[in-house]
Length: 304
Ligand code: ARG
Image (tube, rainbow, N blue to C red; front, top):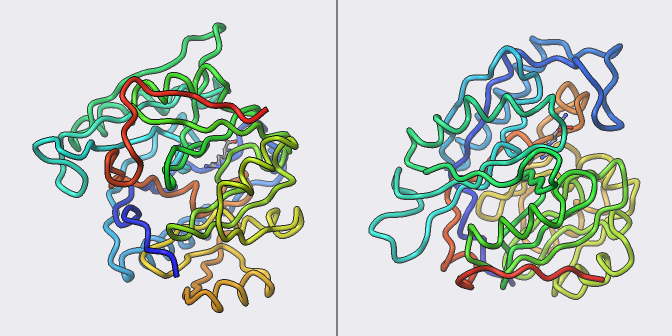
């Protein structure tokens, strides 16, 4: 039995006060299929309540009126503390946040509100990437897991962005190329469950990426493309409870057999812009040197 993840008990979330589909930057979005604002808000609140009932803390950040996708708080940036710093992790303060540089200009205003918010919470913002030069980084494409940061690139983050992330975090980053347009962020195809287990959808990646990921995960719960497209990998784990937007029967049986509890929270309004539970929650309690080994200077390894 793997050990529980040490992070995932404190999250940033953005209340969907201005959630709309103004543009289409992924295959799920359709400006003619707008979310119902009241249902979206109720689903978001149900998610927050479930996380809190499991003992997690949720810090809420206001949504900008000009940023309909800002509800997907995961994408705002990668927040972390460093083990051995005077204070880190659960205590507010003394962390850093590598702010995302979004691929699509439509999402770049989110940073204007998010950076000062993280800063007030004690995470000093650092920026990566420049327009036109590459260096895109979208949090949601990177997870600390076992010996390194597992990261996706292709549709959103690029290699330069991952290189900058490795340097800022001071860790090894393993880059896996995503090729599936419906799984444009890593968190749609990969979900760490504990220290040895993870949900993995190989068809999101190119061949070397899929092979590398299957080699990294000692006990993979391999998802078919159809299973992953239910958003079931876009789940969060609090202790041994997996909070999921959908859970195909086969996936449920394996999770239960491994000793996890499954809680399903309906999220269909939030799916209309192509995101689900993981996308709506950004962990604030990751500690480099505890959750992932430090590798001073950082290093990016691409699976080719
Ligand atoms: N509409 C958003 C976008 O395309 C959805 C983001 C989903 N977030 C995630 N972590 N996968 O950018």
